[in-house]
Amino acid sequence: MSERKIRGNVINRYLGFIKKTWGKDGEEQARKESGIVDINISDSNFYSNEIMVRILQWISANHGMERVKQAGKYTTKNLGLFAYMVRFVSMDTMLHKAEERFKELYKFGKIDIEISENKAIAKMKDVSEVEENCQGWIGVLEAMLELTKTKGTVTQTKCQVSGDDHCEYIVEW
Image (cartoon, rainbow, N blue to C red; front, side):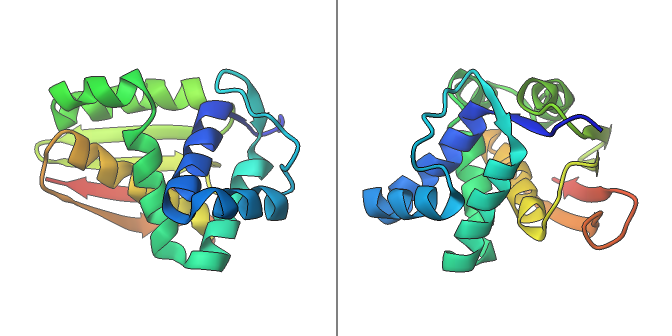
């Protein structure tokens, strides 16, 4: 398996959540404890996913899993032009574009989304390494609902970290 890489803009949005929520001191602490004090992360470059995992674990260890989910929401809502544009599309359109967008941001794993009327099943294979990843994905999917001004729920029904073949999330609206 090739090295797991993630685009820097995703990492920077999670760091942005930390800074917005806990200030510059919180960001500095997260960078220090995540081992990225001296790394200038460029939005357009790819980095080891291990950096992302350490940041998610820092959020969880210091502020709880609910904050990890909130960080996933924040990241999705603040990914630049993409987040702005999705405000003008339906949930169906957003989910159809999600697989393509995933490939632009992650150089590992696979996402498959089955969409039916007012429901989608998102299947993710080799995407989550730790439970914090799963909470982040719930936040990402909840943010999609919010960005499209769609009332709905996200429920995780399978977890690869816990031994299932893949992670699975049901999005209903």
